[in-house]
Length: 229
Image 1 (cartoon, helix red, strand yellow):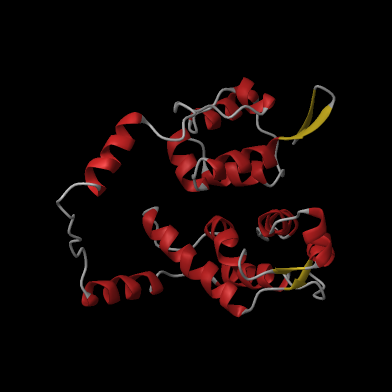
Image 2 (cartoon, rainbow, N blue to C red):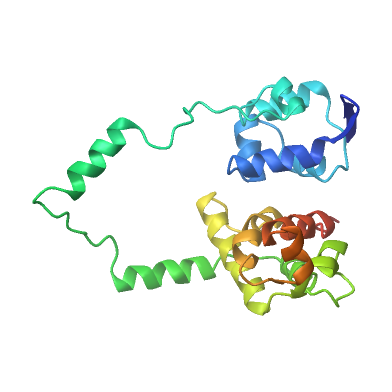
């Protein structure tokens, strides 16, 4: 869904996805907080359906955000815009300049860490979701037919298969943290930037124009969408 705001074309789905990710919410988490079906939120973000004003307001209440802030581009925050609070500085001073030295305490032993690794690796991932991870990885290579324009223009070398492995493993952990037992497309999309940003080698043109790997990955995610049956 696109609309005009002050003469500028406004993509509702793209804006909703960007805000959701900025607030650290998965689609399922936003669905739970707003009471709107996860599938509907996904379709809106893909611009495959246009929400009513009432539905959009209900979704934004789960962030939370007003319709006015959504369309004007304002991101509300309840925190003061300060670098350090006075009490934080006092706490830092008390902890680091006194005679006592804090002692680190173990929170997990080797067996527990191995058990957590095994639990994460055991989370199921459907074949079509794995195929999406593979398509994302392929599309990071400028010579691949799947590569979008931004990759062809700014990337010299794409990611190795380790990038795909990182996305999938991070997606499995994200699913567990969200109390789910299978990996969703959105889990892979959330993991794409941390998994790929240090694995893409940009070319001189990107450096000259001040283009970051995160900007390239955003273009990648916009171009390579999940294939929903």
